[in-house]
Image (cartoon, rainbow, N blue to C red; front, top):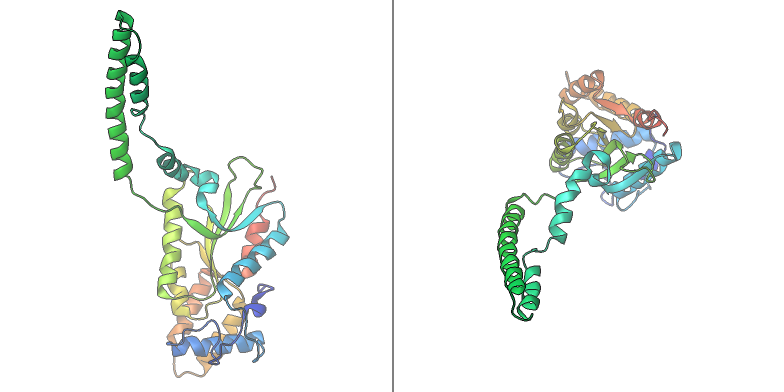
Length: 286
């Protein structure tokens, strides 16, 4: 079953090209036009000004309506979730760190103002010794903070997690939502999945890409066996299948994009939106 909001996000640009298309790619425009024909998108429909954000909002709303007991959010830091909360420890420490040895300066000044005595001498000796010891620790801490990599904490377009009232909520599903794909966008999805896998402490969330991209070549970048991404969900897989079959029928011989698409389809690497909804609905209630 297609996403119930799929058609509403489609539209034509002033140039007449579908808003899924790359204007420098004739195949992108041809497949985009045929996909919109299969979807029944009106010729006068312009679609949202930012279909990428509109896709995130629509998917969040639809999935939240299916499971209102879960927290389904947009652009959340993965450090908000149990498997990744350790990622926030070092940045928090770095922001709040102040050299401890500096605190001894005021204490030494107070001790030096005390009346001379054996006790004052012992106190000053201990304060100076501790100041030197903590200064060495501060130096090591400063060096550690300097040498540690400063990597931004990953944000995921859509996350499905345990209710926010749950201590250390678990992330069950992460989705990179991309209305259409370019090579850099596809590589970004792969990078996100790889980071989720390598940085986790606990069970890996189901991580997938949600898109309306019609080109098999672009879908293959994500769906052709990369271990970083479980699968690609398409907003209307049935309409895309019909569009590819229709375009392939106009070509001579075996059209390689259709062969690529059929292989990905057979392998279950491209799935329809309702399978994403089903994955969310199958999450056990807490």
